[in-house]
Amino acid sequence: MDRILLLMAAQGYPQADAALRSARENAASPARVSYGLSLQDEPDENAHSAMRALGSVQFLCPGFSSWTDMEALWQGEGYVLIAHPAMTFTKNWDMQLLRALRQCRRDSVFSTVLTGYLPRPQDPVDAVCPVAAESFDAQGQLVFQRGTPLRYATSPLRSAFLHPDFCFAPAAFFREMQQEEAPLFLAAFRRKWEIYTLHRPVIHISDDMPLLPCQLPQETDTSLSRFEKRFGLRLATRQLSAMARQGVFTADLTFPTHVPYVVRGQEALRELMSRWGKVSPLCVTAYLSLPMDGPNMHEQYICWFGYLSRLKNLSLLCYGDGESTRKIMPMLPNVLEYKRRYGLPVEGEIPAEETMNYMKLSKPFILAQSREKFLNHSHYVWINFGYLRYPVYERAAIDWANVCHDKIMLSMVEGVPDVSMLVVPDAMLLTLCREIAALCESELNSRGHLPMETELWLMLIKEHRDWFELIDMPGNRELLTLTMMSREEEAHVYS
Image 1 (tube, rainbow, N blue to C red):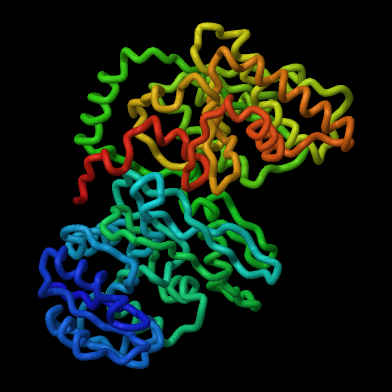
Image 2 (cartoon, helix red, strand yellow):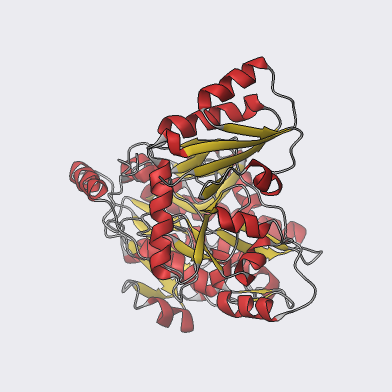
């Protein structure tokens, strides 16, 4: 039997108890799992009783961290799982982790490690995310973020970075890391350990798992150069590739997926039930060449648009110009050339630094232009070009009745309008455009510049609250999830 040592650091045993019991109760073979705890508070009698009930438990008090205390708590187990007190485990998690590790070995000649950001309750989809690079901070440290959720992934995905709060590997890996200094992902690479992101969400976490920025080595050696070449980074010059920012190291930033048959059946049934709906929205977006770069790379936007354009049950129109049109035509045939007159009516040239904000203010006017060309729709929906950032089943049913009402539908995130998606009834679109044009002209005359997009929509909501149906959402770019099957509805194949 492959034995697993579950290592966890906590202030005291009560903070770790729920996660430990979840691990034991849901293990396919509870006898294979032993526990090592790094505690700050000395366990009392109740804690000792709870530990005896778990089975094989070792603890250190005061402990340091799971990584530091591993050698002292290890009793010869073949595998080690670094866990967190906020975790909950699904049925047969131990077998699933061992199986995933074996899958990695088929693709790698080296020993392998599983890691990643685990799914949280507030995430729109139930999927593990790779540890991805976001940027470099003012001190030159590497800042991390959640990469592309590995929804429906067929196997673990090769990764560059480790998450210290969730790591599963043979015990030999953790013993070797005892001799290394941070960052451990470089040490793992140097010692020929392949890092993979777990593809199946067999463990969840109730709280966020933020990663501290990482201080990178100042001296460049052979292993660092090989790491940079392998994963498309230039650490010395602070350059990140789209692959590093997504955490997906393939040329097109995608990975093999397989939608479970039970999910396909659910979607077919939902599509049948919503086929006779009374709303017929047209979704509109734009991909334009701007003088200033956006917050993400072009390769990322093209990848994200691919998720959106493949949806069969979504009528989508995209505006492009020049080179951008040539890039998106193979992905979506319904592309029109954008002209300046389609945007917010403003006299004179727009300064380069204001072009991005001008295009954001122009969203309702581009919708109005689309209405002139396609009059037979009940609603006109703006969706940002890079809106959808994870794989979706291409035949997913979309129940537009959930967002297409008789008012303008807009999501709010912590009191701030999220205009990445905007649903406007046909009857209100021209009125909305006239009001925006008047507000922008007033701001331009009084302040000498156009309002920022968020500022404009807050003014509109304040002056015309009865026009809007506002709905609070946990994050940006999540309004479309209201039209799709929720996490709770989706029959999960891992439970």
